[in-house]
Image (cartoon, rainbow, N blue to C red; front, side):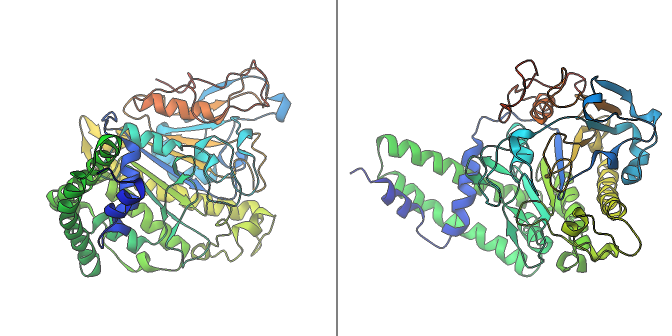
Length: 457
């Protein structure tokens, strides 16, 4: 007898493991079993409330106003001093590339471009509804890990545990950002955790073992198309069991590199939580749990009014975005303090990766870190410009230590952010020339496909 789909779902969700298995299985299915295996790592650091191009502009490189920017500029960044925001990267000066002049008008603009920032696509503002796959997910498909992608971050409210704000598997399929470092630790390092974290990991393993027999019985009741579809489910389920087993197998590695959970993991202070998330990102990469991490700091239309009290700043970033100052400091000075803090955390992450030998170098040599804002060039973005900082060369696949500036919007030689994401996919060994959505307002002579040749090695 052939069962209807609703009966299959009912059979699949029998038992206490349903709430655990359903979202995980859907995520694993989306990746498929034929992703190319790679060893390159990608970290996206996305900060809310906009990134004025001046705050990452190397000192000594002048830019003209809008339509005066008619030529492509390529320079060695080591010939110029880093601005205050980027000073924490001074020891890695030759790995830093600043990219100016890309656009993302198709994303819409406003306080946040939500999923559009990493998706290079139109967005539904104020709603967790992605319109397509995001670049971090595309790179995770090309470089799969035990956890294909790990999303961490902070929102404007410390009580948030999980939000959906910037990463997506596909249209209408958003991925979570874990906002509580202590809970994220239990999810990632539960196999070596103590107390409740360890108990939760053991319970999940027991549920997986318990459901194995039920799934096999149900499979025997199916035929034809439904059996084929169900076998895909079983394959994803087996992958889950395999991941639990592999987490147990690498227990010693995890113990060696897992962060020490202290007060900052349970803190209500934004700087503490963000610091803890960077610890988790480093440990997850070094411990071999994943090859792609996205860290979102106050990202998304619903979550951007973050206060950085840990830096002595009481006014929210929303207030700063509207020109608000505090303690004798201007809005620009406050924004620079906050941005510099993010690059201090990035530099610390780089230090940890650089200390880990890999091949003829270190893990840092095979890692690319991409920094951007979900609000493009300003608090009320229009996306005429979208500044980026790209750190590292991904094992020699990218040119590093560059300053690249593209002509202004719609002028000859201009490029949209889609082309940067194409470049990252080429570097990851999964070349694509048409990531995201095309901008219908760009002239037909403006190239919107392919990678940025100036950045590829």
